[in-house]
Length: 410
Image (cartoon, rainbow, N blue to C red; front, side, top):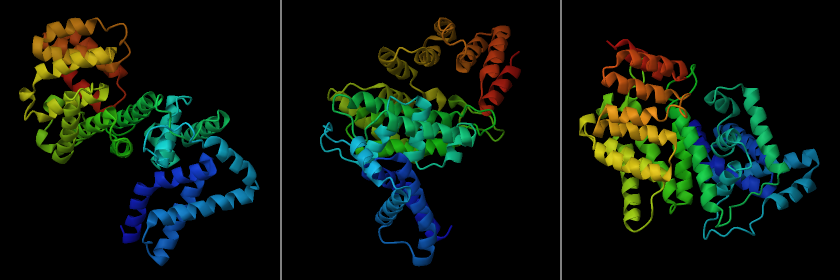
């Protein structure tokens, strides 16, 4: 890669969201902001090769994108309309969150507005904030490019039609709105960590990396929010295990069987540092939220030199705390895995069987049950549970692992 190409790649990584957000504030139109930003980067490819990289690439891109936006408005002869729309959609009269004043944060909250369907929030955030192309987003979520284009177009139209303002939520609304943003980013991360499609890589590094990058951006903008820090720590500690997550044969490798020497020590160290930061806050009276507890659970796992060294009693204690915050059946299922290690598989199986009705269509329920039955020597029932888990699993690596485990039954 040439120096210019590297500079453009770095500028896209660092400046895309800033440029789009600045244009959205100026012109009040996501279409104009997106297209003008894309045109500015395309112009940079040509100009920087001929003239060299400017001293301040971000300022150059923003200025160029502003000119592109104005040119488009003039061509469409809608300048007055767009300016009225900008006045309508940008309104900072209700912003009351202290010193926070960043166009990128406004853009994230706009893209993740609760009036939009979750799939639209994900697509719009990846496009407008992350800078992923429509084909990249379509490939990530296994839909046709035209389908994703329509999804993003409808989302932007909904923002205009519903007059969703480009602004920070009020102080009263901020906690709930931040929670919604984190849910979007965690969904993106999980799709990368355990890709749901049968015809894609078992682990999508591009999606996990983007989710971590965007969560890091939000933490830089909201450094005092414990759940933002917790989610970033959680992602880092999970991502650290990625090099050991898939075998040479393409199987997903469960945590207990992973080569821990292959884990990313730097990511683990940073994740642990963030967890300690939140533990200190908890000691000072700040009650930890869901993501902070999940991060603490992963910190216990990544602190153990071997699987046998895992402090399962601490993991279970953390799950006991988590289930009081989030009594969902999936949390109960994950807690049962810890129970199996502390109180035995029979006790855990009783817990899992109580979840049968609500988790009947969830592959991990059947995979967990199959493993517990295997440990109890109930091979026939274990095989049936593996069959159901394989039928429901969409991830190619997970299917390969479950198939091998089923074949090992006596």
